[in-house]
Length: 157
Image 1 (spheres, one colour):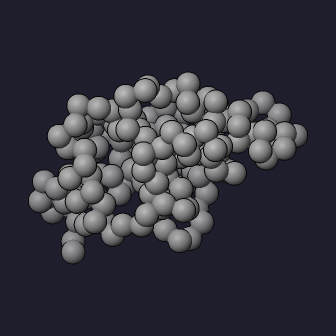
Image 2: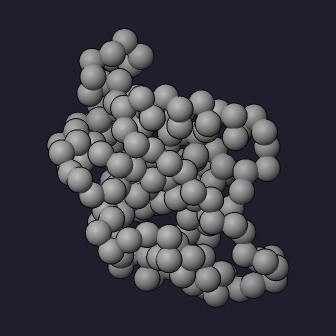
């Protein structure tokens, strides 16, 4: 399994970057895992929301391949328990040769074109988190999923 975490916007806080990097390194013990940051749009504070989402969406679509399996982290997505998410990963992706791309969009979500390209939508919680915090939460849960799949002691049910 190969996987990419594609995120819009850089992380401003070192402690957030350090936490994400820690989980990226842990995940890399199980799969080929990378993270790519799409830079913030210039003058994004002066761009209307729909136009901003469209511009970010164009950058997202340029960063993925036609063969990729796309999973958006989105508030409208399906919610899983940690065990349920590990089962979903194990059942859907452990045997594929395609790259799985998890995408965290910008502050206003995704453009229609990105939604149309998506294969899956996953919600991490009914709560709202900053996009920078979502990176930590998601990478921790992905790492947790692999420890559950491998029956390792990290997850305590």
